Image (cartoon, rainbow, N blue to C red; front, side):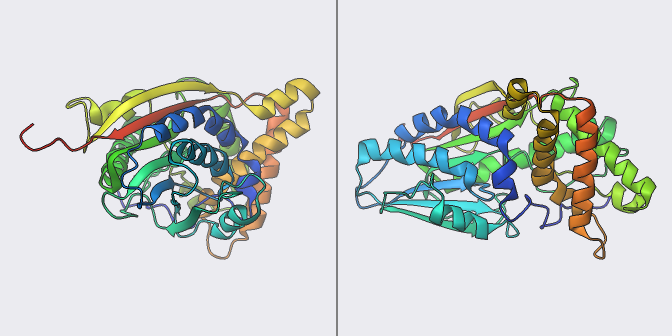
Length: 361
């Protein structure tokens, strides 16, 4: 099977769309903030003349990073004071919408730099499946909904675009790729982290054996793509290559690298918790009964998060905007017929870099 590497432009929808419509991710982030604050309290700050380094692994367009990073910085300020420099690195793929990220950092009313002259943000355009910073450099790492994306797509999925609907040998390839990528991500971060540093990873979790609202959303989108093939809007070949590079992991998958020795590349698990992530769009619907608004919010969540990756399979002559509009509108039409919440669980993992043992211990 040839390498189906995800195209580099298969990132979140640009021009601030992801910032505006990633409400599912935002609600999951809020559940993990207490873990990030706790992790920030436990870092080993080192000499007073050294800057504290925070890294946002998989920042996207930055909006969903502001609240958690503001909380982390506030926690660090509570015991280090206001004069200690704090460097914040936002890491994402080169094709990420960094213009919107910088605009958020400059003018968003919730930006973590507000009223703190000693916080210095910057960005790195590189995959976090590579080394992105020097060894023994990072004090606090944060990654929200990013490590669900694989480094490469291992194979095509007959009849669907999402790995949750794969079976047999195809499913096994996605599971193997997810395990390899998770170990690679951990090993790379362990190298970058200082002794005593903490890393907080937030990931979605869903049970592929349950017909959840999230999987219904995937199935509805899959049906719309089939309609587009029938209409001649996309070719059979284009449709076959439309595969999302995201893959959900269960708690056992996240803990597997630590199972044998209790640690992995010097990282130990301090916490691993799962929560139900409420669907704010569904909560709005329960209040106002507006099915059109609910369908629009869910369709825009899908478009801003997943459609750019599907569009990466289009021929160069295709109109990407027209493709995205048709998929969004078809999805809204189907969602109007069967209103349902998007049920997703949130997994939060807190990892600590072990302090080096003194010689002879």
